[in-house]
Amino acid sequence: MTKSKIISCRAVAVLVMVAGAVRGETLRELAEKRGVLLGSAHSGRSADAKYLDVMAREFNLVEPENATKFGPIHPSQDTFRFETADAVVAYGAAHGMKVRGHTMVWHQQNPKWVTEGGFTPSQLSEILHQHILTVAGRYRGKIFAWDVVNEAFLDDGSLRETVWRNKPGIGLEGTAYMEQAFRWAREADPKALLFYNDYSAEGMNKKSDAVYAMAKDFKARGVPIDGIGLQAHLMLRSAGNLASIESNIKRITELGLQVHITELDVRIPVDAAGKASAADIEAQGRLYKGVAAICLKYPLCTAIQTWGFTDKYSWIPRTYPGFGAALLMDGDFQPKPAYVGLRDALILAPK
Ligand code: XIL
Image (tube, rainbow, N blue to C red):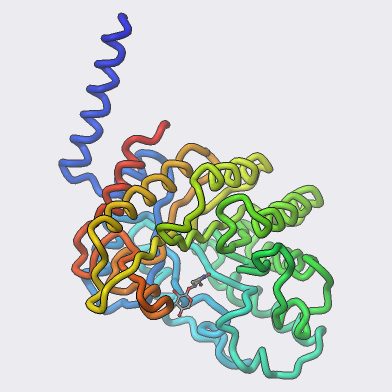
């Protein structure tokens, strides 16, 4: 075949793919064709039928936004509250979606009975062990991947002080307390994929260096870790550069570990009515596309998950006043350029 024929064949192929999408292929259909997991956090709003319909139409992966965290699921020493988590897990199963779990060891959303209980390290160790066995055990075979440890490093790469590490901690130095948590998670569910998850560690920097060093050490010593979660709570103008994110994904996957993009959103400035500028909304679409395209280049980057999908329920406005409009759809479930960007990345990604 001549070169021009090859080029025109390629052009036709791309046109056919784009036409397919225009005909109305959902993100989920495109992700399934591409063999990648595309997910959203689930806010727990099980009464919003439209929300549930759109989520199951567009995604093949779901993660409870809060329901499997320590505080919500284990509010007092002798009480577990599984209702919301059970509902999200059942919703995922009913719609053929995989479910991620989040998270066992974190410095936030811990109940007072843990943080103010005056426990000794050995008591705390027993509490965490039993917690992991109970929660990961309940969802064995239903939750396919867990963020075992969340946000344990500071931006300078040092370890964060938390109730689990050193206040009073479970009695193990350095990263050994995390190693212990991974071992307990493997004990609780031998088949679940186990992740370390963090923010501001998407690109190459001191924090991602520390995460990488720990993962490399864990891999070398057979500590059960399967992947790194890159949260990707991005800001339009300070998202770092995509090449740096790619370098980090490359080095993690070269260790034989998976990468999941776990909490993608792109916050932009909004006015008092919650409206962002058209230029920012367009630029946001390009960033979604760019991040997704990088992940899709690496076979071990196996999931792209956004932290919710409609601006109606995003955590951003209440957490970062003056910012919002961070997700794929507006408050009326209308797709934004971010949706189109993600869709284009899925259509154009190399197989
Ligand atoms: C956030 C939730 O979205 C909020 O609803 C909640 O009030 C606080 O936590 N990193 C994480 C997530 O790992 O668990 C956080 O989720 C967002 C930042």
